[in-house]
Picture 1 (cartoon, one colour):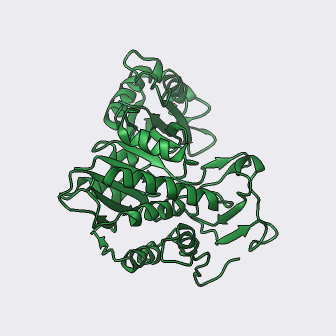
Picture 2 (picture 1 turned 45 degrees about the vertical axis):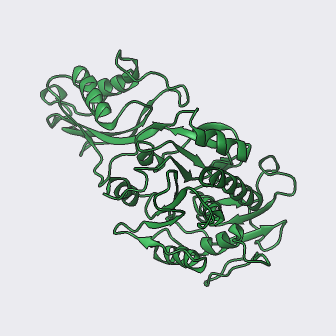
Picture 3 (picture 1 turned 180 degrees about the horizontal axis):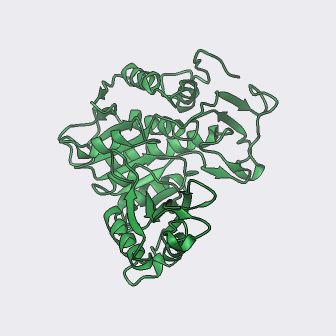
Length: 403
């Protein structure tokens, strides 16, 4: 089903927080262009349970439970924005409340009797994880908790992560004194302890125009791509290249977009090649920029102008990060969830938090299944039983840390 007005179903008979009921309503609040309705719904949900949220200047929603002077501090984070386009909410409970064209998850991807799913944009990325995190947050009794838990929900993870960056760089950053951070993303209930970074930039080559009938009288910028591509292929063979990471494997450098030339009968004077870097620790954005510039400078002919520029963005790139596998939060959450411990396949705002505290990524849902993409795809869905299981595991984890 889908409708213009959000509706809430799947209510429990008591006052316990129901993550599935929350998720059903949350998915009906489109947040691909404007997060305000979803943020309002989140704040109302907190207020209904006696929690007073705070919205900072960057649009982050912050709330705490437990004593302010507690020795133990746990931060729960995810985001409320989604990618475009919006995909309407549907509840598919064994074939009910869904249209005839709904795509069923592959049987291999669901547990027995686990084909009750919620579909729609954000169902797994990342409102499903948000619902599970809220369940754990509300499970903390402020009157008896020895530790403090902070809920920190960001508004623009899918774009520039301005909220997350301001969250960690501000004077009152909640992660600065954290003992651990749990970031909600679709991990299929596995505990993810590392992720590659992502840098993007463009290599600009400059030559000189000439008539194509006499190419030797010009400097062919597109022709210089041959040496550039060779330098990219061998970039990680250099002596100072980052070593293979024990969790993430090797870094990659991939040419993705090329532009150049203005006329079919003219030697091109300009060419631009965009590259995508998936980094591994300890490589930083600045180190990558310097190393690639040196590699290209040695490869490109002297008569060709060369410049490598990062894509402009208001926040730092999401760099590679990893958490020590022996960190207590890893063992506690893995024991509670029964999931594997592994790297996460996508870039997340965990990159910003991991510099302050041991950070893990966890949540219900999958980035992709055997039929193809799930997150960011038209068929985005999350299994209802996975949402409940994530909520249970997070409740167990949070209570073991702060009580």
